[in-house]
Image: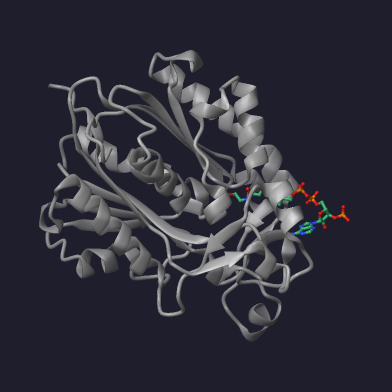
Length: 335
Ligand code: UT7
């Protein structure tokens, strides 16, 4: 059977308009612009309107990716939404997107692998195409993290932001597109980054609300160490599987959590700064949306050209990690 190569045929992103600056945050909690910039690299983040839920952001990004791919919603076979902040426990956010964009024949499901979610979802979507089951898959990473923040906890509330990014996956030319991936998990240390209540372990109650157990709790130092250890390792593993070396890598789009994490990981890899994309100064950590938003901006800025070997790498709650290595399959100015 002929091998089917899978590439990105369209990409798009959406950021809510409202900006929350570090100075504004320093009026809400005991922090400062200097501390946040020095320790994280974040200068501002976007916050969704009260009327906007995750599906609203996902739809905007999804439609932009479809337009960029010149694919209509009716042609889509499958929609996967990666998110840790779905509209509801159920129905899935992907089903809401499917209905609202009128993707009449699409199957739809959500994936929750926190910040690694988009890369996991892209690998999953690609498998549906390479196995010959589907032809066109829409993969979206979308988050409204501002809804699960404890706005009194300076350890977390300065870090995250809202946004969405999406790609359309389709068959591409031979030897282009996704070459390999590396997915992994370390559930043993899952409690270092957690939203403790609202699930079956600790259902919502007056107490869980009072104790702010529906918002993110994090051991920042433990996550930092895990991230630096994992990002480089996973990138190398995925490159290895593709038969490539670090010297062959033209561009890397990492999860946008903290510039110090990115810098330390890249130093370990011996990868120069020019080959690594960052935009977390503008958006903070948008969890599963961070990689597709960054990839979209890198493509629109002309940083990636046809034939480039690129890597996407993410880490997050779970704990979890994910990398994809691909040979960029598009050559037009829009990506
Ligand atoms: O997608 C995955 C999501 N999570 C992450 O990527 C987080 C990974 N971790 C990190 O990015 C970093 O650990 C943080 C940015 C969260 C914290 O940076 P750090 O350099 O590890 O700081 P720290 O936790 O060691 O705290 C240093 C000091 C502490 O004060 P003391 O104990 O030295 O007096 C904190 O209380 O900084 C204090 N601090 C703050 N000060 C001002 C913590 N948060 C803040 C804040 N503003 N927002």
